[in-house]
Length: 161
Ligand SMILES: [Zn+2]
Image (cartoon, rainbow, N blue to C red; front, side):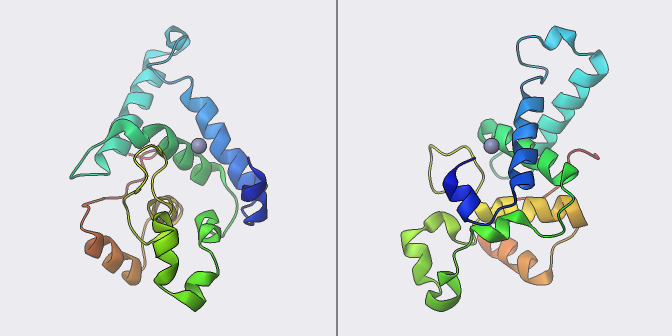
């Protein structure tokens, strides 16, 4: 957790929940020590990983799995009613509009992360992923943006499936 995170207004508990997800992921079926997991737990980890990968239908990509898994756990354990990813969007968006995205392309409402070295999904992807897990639906406006993005992402609650 960085000072930037605290300053952005993200609740500490949301960040802690995300980090808890990383700890759980360390015990997944592929890690060292996985022999201590039951067959059922290994199968559950594999099912969740497979589900997370398949959210990106056009390009199923395991690159984002670790962070998406942590986001899934965070959304499941969070008791916050607000979506923590809304806080990432700078207030300039409302005054400068699309010019804001020229300097911060990862804040654009795109499901693609434009930084090839960053294994987090884009902020918009994370916002929609969180929303789907909490509510099981997206607003019509968000559905339009998902279609416009054209990236064929289908959000799922991979913990429940
Ligand atoms: Zn993380």
